Amino acid sequence: MRYKVLTVDDSKTVRIIVKKAFKPFDCEIFEAANGVEGLAVAAKESPDLILLDVTMPVMDGVEMLTKLKSDPALKGIPVVMLTAEGGRDNVLKIAKIGVRDYLVKPFKEDVLIEKCSRVIDLKPMNEGPAKAKSILDPAELLIVEDKPAIVQQIQEGLKHTPWKIKGVSTQAEAADQMSKATPDLIMVSLSLPEEAAFTLFRLIRTNVKTKYTPVFALVVKTETQQQQQAQTVGFTAIITKPIDTLDLESKIAKAMNLDTSQRYYAIEGDMMVMRLPEHCSPAVIAEAGAYLKPKFAEAVDAGFNKVVIDVHQIKSLHMGIIKLLFQAMQTCRELAMQFVLVGNAQIISECKGFEDTRGWTFYDSLEEAKTNLSKAVGSPALAST
Image (cartoon, rainbow, N blue to C red; front, side):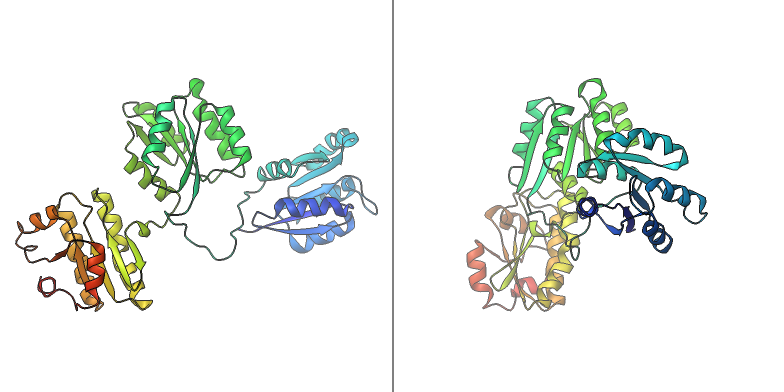
């Protein structure tokens, strides 16, 4: 929903400041220079919020507010009053007429947005067409944890990612850090003293800049009561200690809605390369499998008809990997794509122990596979499986 905000002020400078403050958010700003113009715009546009100056020529804010509240069609519109320092008492007097809040001039843009976000649910503006962020894109992660070893463990476990991970140990430090830069994801330890984690969570959710930011709870696996409390208040995910960083990375990607296909699929030169990582857990197999057909079809649509299926990093086969490889080969055949396999000595040896994989042919290196792929129509041994 795109909100309509009406700013009624005889100062053009103030109206410019208001427009600038709301620019990052999905709002439409309407302007009026006095109460008469303000009533006319309000009647025509039915704004979701009115920012109303007290002192104006022609018709001041008090008279406009009185007329608003006497009009059945307009009386429900929330109003935030703007006043000079000396006008505070005046605002308090007219509060009974019906104002939601007030601001004293001069005011800071973030204070204006904070007050208005209590009235309307401000959401950041999407710049241009929505584009899924990739797992390879930089991101800012904030960890609020008073145990340095945990912060170091997460930083070490995620050091292969392009993510910048900052650790702080207190609620105050977290608030200070968030005021400097809005993180893409926040992790908060539930073991912070005096239930500071839940206090911080409430602050995060009431701040217009972080209200939609994913927030993970870090908690000892056996602390089931704390986990239930975190789920009840609305933490995005629960991460139990000791931390499985592979699971954490997967949950971060999901919470941030990241495109993770580039972990497994990439166009290199004139061909598609499908890579499986060393640790192929059921979650990894499911993730790679979900992208398989769309990525292969996307490659064909872009003019690529060759695929290298690279499993040389895998230490040992299991049935999930074998099924995924069969799926990849079958998809290649359906799309008339040429394909070859790259493996290691252990994988080649294990394949000979399965009836269905005994005839698979592997190249020893990616370079060798790429060189020979252009000469092959697809390995006869593979084509017969």
